[in-house]
Length: 165
Figure 1 (cartoon, rainbow, N blue to C red):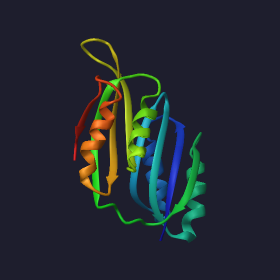
Figure 2: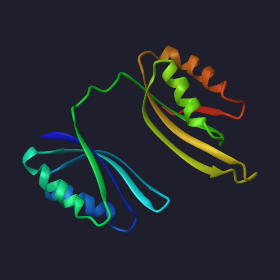
Figure 3: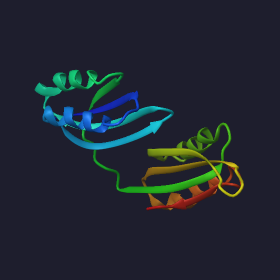
Figure 4: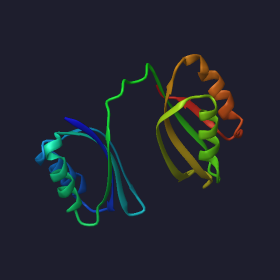
């Protein structure tokens, strides 16, 4: 079995996940990991699949038959998971460059971002535009967490950072 990372985009409609899952199942694929979102009328997904090489081309063809679907993929290799994985919730007033500031600080500390999920919302009581993110990081050593928090707080006094795991 080979591993493939797929990215899919298609105008959103009911039944898309079932169509994709049906194609994967019909071609002997194993659905290992995924992230799926609806954004501005588009369904976007990232999937990690295991598929026998003899079925791969047929699976790609079946997926490409889904109306309006755009597909990219790459063969991957199984990686050993890092020993120290932590997740944070970050909330701040929304502003241009905020993701760049956050990712620049994390990268500057030599930390790998493994997962980044963000949303834009309005605060219910004030209507202020908020940026909310969940960030999964792999750390070589948990002692860097205090430095990470201190560095992120330099972005602004509106930033709230909570460790989730």
